Length: 339
Image 1 (cartoon, one colour):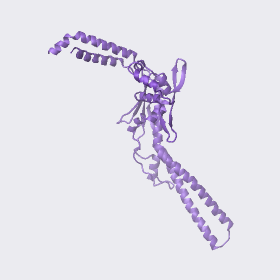
Image 2 (spheres, one colour):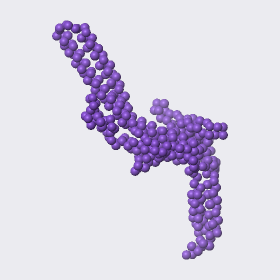
Image 3 (cartoon, one colour):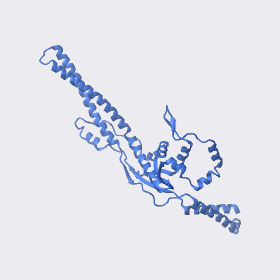
């Protein structure tokens, strides 16, 4: 009771401290850089069953000698892993080098996202922090200025390398480009937050395009490799089949109306080679058609439920929440100070 009475008696000092915190919160709210968030929602296809083409072939036991012996399994990459694609280093390397349109004082300019983040996307508090709290690190950065310009890599191992500035930009993109998935519905939400609403929409669109291409390439990579291998073998065996076919036809033309056991044995041998080549060629032709069907089935369908749009309202700063938090912190700090 004495403590509560003492706090009440010291309310003037507490209100002064709360007022200081509210003034600080007002400064932060008014000087914070305005941000816009562009969003898109995707519904990727879930691979749970075989496609219609292979199902039809299995149902009728093959059509024209075709069959689908390849077993359907679970999807190699689950939809709940898709958001991790947009938080990987290859994605940041891709997005930083993509060209975007930026409205400047000199008009619209096309530049890479890395150039925009390095030269234009600077906030008031970022500059203040760079030359106050982070001043020692800024000086060290000047003394150790990275000589690398752009991407470089090991020529023998083909390992990409980021420069120091690119690494810093990629770290800032972690909080600006986000993705999430609803486990129940499987809907993927992709958002991009930037000071310019048009840039936010461009980055969100590029992110949607990247993840769509990535999923398609991942799902069809193995089937595409199988298709290329079978196609090469098919072309090779086709040449062998046509060559033996010509040899057999030429042999029969040259030995027409000739009766000889030796010639009959040679013809029988060529006929056997022709039959073997035809069977192999015909089998590869069937497998080639199966592989083409497999690639088509493995190609996912990604439906865009909510396309990217240029945001009309700012998403940050949330000034009311900033004022509430600063007022609450001022009250706690004021009570603690008088006690």
